[in-house]
Length: 338
Image (cartoon, rainbow, N blue to C red):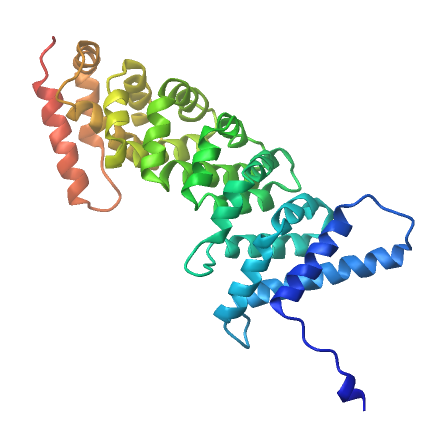
């Protein structure tokens, strides 16, 4: 007889609705309920988050079912489940935080009727990105909020909001937080913001050129921290060598201060920093409309530069690098003072 009264399996919609109620409970101030009752409800919440993750990712026994994923996604963004989840995250245990982070990441890619409805929701609740970005100031939450933020900025409109927000300036400090894992996570988000959406990034850099590169130079390229310098020069090369940023690149290579920084980085003991600095330095040399002060610096330092480049070898043979280096050497050797 017991089999006849077996409870019906919960649907994806049921799970999301129940999760929403449990998140509201977790976020609300404690009331006079038995501690065991609260633990029971939190355990149920953790179980639901795991079930949502299994629906979206599948497991060793089964692949995700598209229809179930679509139902879950639609119900999740029908009401403020994401807002509740982000607000309640500090009150969850570590495993539940990890599950929640993976659920949010997956939902950014789920389409319902050929639409990324997560993007529509985020555009209407864009203040949630402010909570996630500010999360880098919280040691316990930084990695979870950072991972969520990186997935949300897959959407161009969301990335544009973060780029144009006051949080963008704070990334220069987040990248230098003493906690290595948090600093690395902030650097990964910073890189994603500056490389994923080409046209949005080009517009942002053009509008914010002065303050952005002043911060970039002083806080990152001239940082006392080796890891910070190495990541910064690599990212700078990626930005300036991208065709969509040609206007910004042209402006960057007309600055004597920028050239001075590159020449200093060329003299670093780290081969990886030297190589990445060379890829930016060659842009100054290749510029056919060099300002007179740039030419003067290159001419004044010609013998040192040629000697440095003459000894400059990669660990593995690279024809493109050797060709670029030969061209730079020829250009510098042929320079005449203006």
